[in-house]
Length: 247
Image (tube, rainbow, N blue to C red; front, side, top):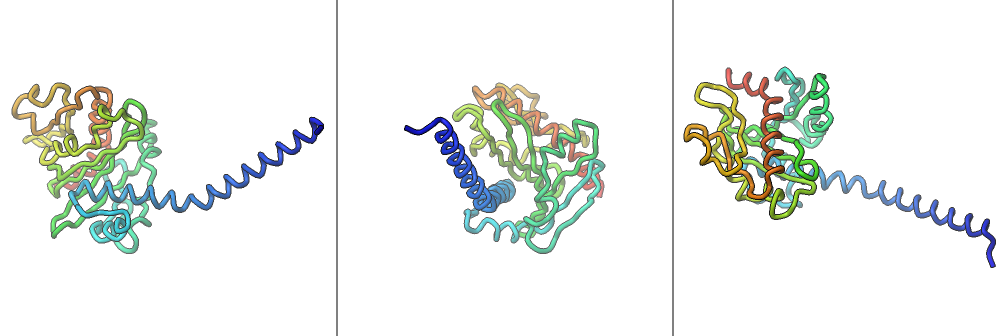
């Protein structure tokens, strides 16, 4: 019969071996995991600009084909870095942590945000990444704007754990396609964002329906999260957007 000391040492050795194996596996898999995350990020950016035919095996190639510039802007709307050559995933804008930057904003600190410039059939499209909070965790997205910096070309959304069939509907075409052609400024040039309206945009005056979309039935908290994300993050981009609209 083994002593308690022997059993303890044996168990400790097994734990150490298992921990070492898991650590090694994590180190080996990390580059692949990071690549997959980057590919999903690229897919979202391209999809918001209505670029089709993007598959996992051609995502990086297509991203480098369509994205002609990555800009990093500061809280004043000034471009502090522009990346045009080489692999676009190597640019500072692509690597920036938006969660940290938007947290800096809440603390009254300077923050930087990415802008992706896409050339699609000779037309320039600007993609602004978004980040917010839903019912069960983070939500995110991309808004693609025409070069008037007002009209939406397309949207993508993602979530970490919204309820399927309810809040999770933000990722469906039915929800996303509502945004196409909507405008984030009114006729007087005032910023409106895009309102996610419970009960539908029919509740809005006719002139304001161009600035709204229908909320998700049964997904009120997630809809509110999308509404807040759009307003808060677009407001962060506003100094840059307004500079472009004056040019």
